[in-house]
Image (cartoon, rainbow, N blue to C red; front, side, top):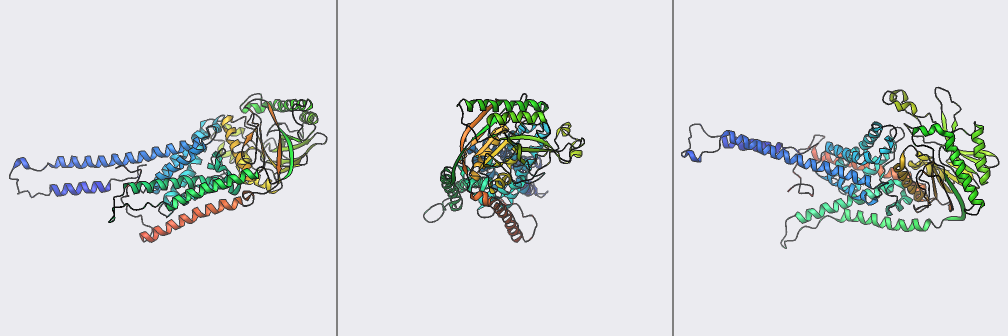
Length: 597
């Protein structure tokens, strides 16, 4: 990947060799002792110089490669379960420094971006291969890393524009949008914003959602890099002028960017803290979330579907007993996790009877995560619907939310006949069909927004629910297949959604984590992993619409458009400067913080 060349060194060495060896044959030196070096020695010196130059070039490239890997690992550390949210700033600063260097070509930008992406996603996503092996995990990591490689390419393309930190940040946000969109509906996991669940930067989600948080973190990091570069140049520059003063470093633009990010963070944080305790209609409700646990982890636990249902019925009966004894407040409705009834309770009388027992014991509606048979079900294509059903203690099943964004390679397999040739697990992928609806159900007189597990990753899911009148949001999940890291990361995503829409978010999983997240992103009453438990808390209902809820997509599109315009402007300037599309000759770069002296 070394993008330095030794062409100039080679030409100089060969020129020296020609000059020193161009001696007439009949001109013998008067003093044999003072004769010049032999051709062999000159050739050896030239080769040595070339080897030295190549070695230096290789070392510089290796240093940049190492920096890219370190940066990717640092960005991974900003996410749960590690949770060092501040690590995102040095991570992106390092990457920005590598890509800013004039020694980094477009091809180098791709390579360094790919290394950064692999170092980031491989340790972030091991839970994806926990049950299906390393190949799908590594393939997914590589696919995600290609988007970071694309960012590296775009960054190198726009780095010569004034204000490069701004264009870098816009390019990063644009590639996050691309990764969240394609292929197969996209994979938003790993957006910078999703690692900022405990960061003051989270407050910006109220005004622009996850895209604005990612943009602000990236802009702050790249602007700090630009400040460091300018200060380094100032320190290394010789004194000039009659007074011997050094030139003033160009810190106005990057300094302004840093200040704007800090001011926006401070102002928005105050607004979030204030809004989380206001902007309601004065109503509060008590809600219970039941985590029933599963009998055994892994894919085989789905074969014990009745046991999973019984566990959730049992824990709900415990809740009902505690309410009757005065140990817990009476809830207005209860939320069960996704797949809490893998047996279709609409078609199976035994499952319906068990759910009725729980609902009648607690005396309020239960949101049941059920797997329903699709009308087009056949033995060859057993199509199903992943549904959250409002189960009334008197009338039984009522309103429901059918999962609209189903997970590729899990709930369904795109190109099934093709991928079946590569993995035996292809036969285990589901046949789930996306549903429709407005993302809202009503239980106990409360309008409840629902994003079932995978759906919470996508901005449009809970935005749709909130725009359709949801007063509280729920994220029923089934993470029994993926372990603790995935659950921690999903909870962090739910924190972003809580601030983004100014709503309480109820996260409930079969095995954990279950938690209540307040509108300022603070989680309360969280459960432990792999233990049956319930949370029974009073929450406030909110009915306002945040700027992110109303205008969030426009913010993301605007940032992506900025990146596109920056690339076009850079290409236009390059054409004007070079007189066409020909590749310019390589120039020697000025001293920089990453160049050896």
